[in-house]
Image 1: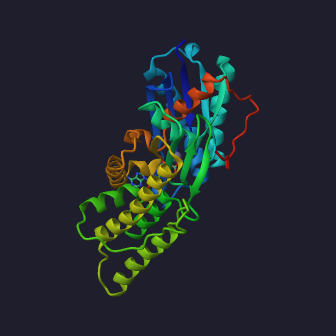
Image 2 (image 1 turned 60 degrees about the vertical axis):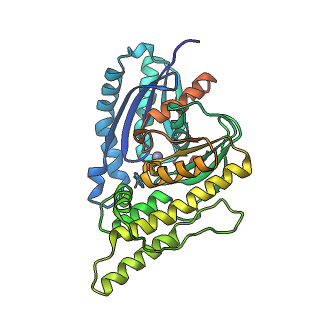
Image 3 (image 1 turned 60 degrees about the horizontal axis):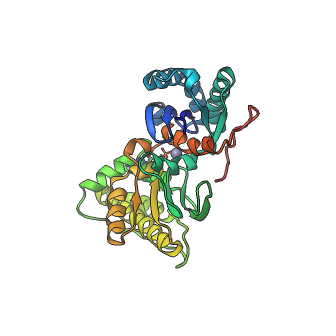
Length: 334
Ligand code: KG4
Ligand code: ZN
């Protein structure tokens, strides 16, 4: 068939991202403006500030993404945008930009689910085979998603409290690192040889759910107890202990989910998929178990628009477009 060129926009949280993706696979441009420096001072994302920053940078990101892709605007096949979930004010900026472009260029508009984007980021590497199992680990989500077929998402497990990325960020904060702290904890854990023993939350034996708040509290206790004794906390030992606990539960539940559902591929996705410890542990276990594992390159793990282009491509193939009256859906489910 004919080549498709999708311009994709992602503004659900604190990254203003625009990408042009050819045939759902070739990333012609992948522009990301991160607001992390702005939000660091507040220790987390401030929604009002995020919206304002998106407004400031969306036009520049659009221009740069189009220029780098080298595709004339009239040759675009569709405009895609993250519809939800996310911060409503942040989503709105991307949606208004997408609607304006689609209207001005007379192109179809595609609404994409943010987590579907994280999952389909794996399409940028290799085509998915079904049924497959996605382990979604991000700042807002920790889920095991069974996909019997393309576009069908069946949530078989989720966190009952904190998302794993959120737990990373809180632990990093307790250890004195800025937002987002996941990469710092990852680095520290790699440097450590002694592991501070921390609990694992397995929940009921047959459950695919997760829980990280108990572990987070255990870390905070360990840090406070050292401080009360007038000692400096064993930062890297705690980081390693925390990471070991998180990894073991994530990896073993994901492997069991693949085994028990007959999934033919395991997909790792979301910002925490950038974690070196998790990538290594999952790769090793999948090799042992002869499970086909897909892991996106680092730049497609944390929020980006190329993943939205990869997800939107499937909707484009099926002619699944949305009208100009489409709305932001901050609580959109898969
Ligand atoms: O997917 P993402 O960019 O945004 C959401 O949709 O939430 O994920 C961001 C999360 C943050 O919590 C961040 O700390 C975490 O991903 N993260 C990491 C690493 N890189 C990013 N967590 C652990 N290790 C990393 N290397
Ligand atoms: Zn995300």
